[in-house]
Length: 438
Image (tube, rainbow, N blue to C red):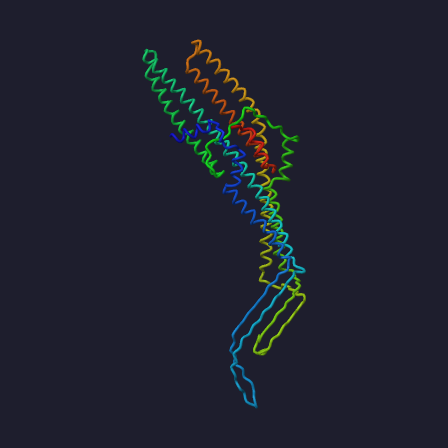
């Protein structure tokens, strides 16, 4: 219980050691395990370009062998066969260079590797944008959980004061036991709600700590100045066109289609000839029984043509399989495009509607503050009691919580809108961080 209260007090204290949003994001770049996995996947993916290019470059190999031999050699001497059993060492060393001159398979591998590398880059952009959303989402979740604690505490304090009023009225004979029991029951529920809110705050801080890789106890809070960002000209259609050309998820799937197309070409090349330039150098020592005790050196340069004739139907089957996978990649792009546009519309609407909600709640907060001031003056004049002030305070806290949530939703909607459009960057984190203060 003490730890939970400490966490809530730390968030509310606004101490100088509070972790800013930019600090949280920088820490996540260093420590988040999901982002590290994305970096490793990107590093592995971009090597596909070099792997594909290698199919077009010369291939060299060297061979060396050394053997001990014992042979049965029968020769005719003076009209009679004579058998001997020579024992000798034989060896062969060679170097061969092979350079493709015409190979549809090698060209398809090269194009496929380039597409796969570009797809990996696009997927990494998706993961980076997801990290931005996860950090900002966890950051605002922790701040909103703190607002919930503050509201739950205000509700609990209101009922505590109500219980005191009921006790005084019961002693004076103006209240009933039923009123006391009813208030006590509501107070018990409020105590449980406060504990739950404190647990949620602890969980939210733990979630953020896991992402950033550091223990987080203090955060910047929303500043009083909350400017509304103007939307770009063109409305939703402008965002839509941007998303169709810049969304990294769609770009990754477009490259996946290209990789699948080159896979079809690669499998289809099993029916086409291949021409290679081949050069070799070899040196042999007693390579066979016929060259026993002889050494030879050979050099060759030429062209090798390989013409496939029949492979049991494997080439045709592999080509059909690759064609089916290409169709699946195209369908996947269409489905993802629909999902992106739905998300774009959702976040665009959320950003627009959040503005009106923020403006309405700002008026509600201002009215609540005026009510608090008026209630305080009324208490001094003996017209109102402390319970009225606590009720007004609870109403103000509720409006402030709802306003904070509306502002968090607005910021997240903007970031998600930019993510769907493919324009979300680290600069947006810096811009969003200006909305918070320590």
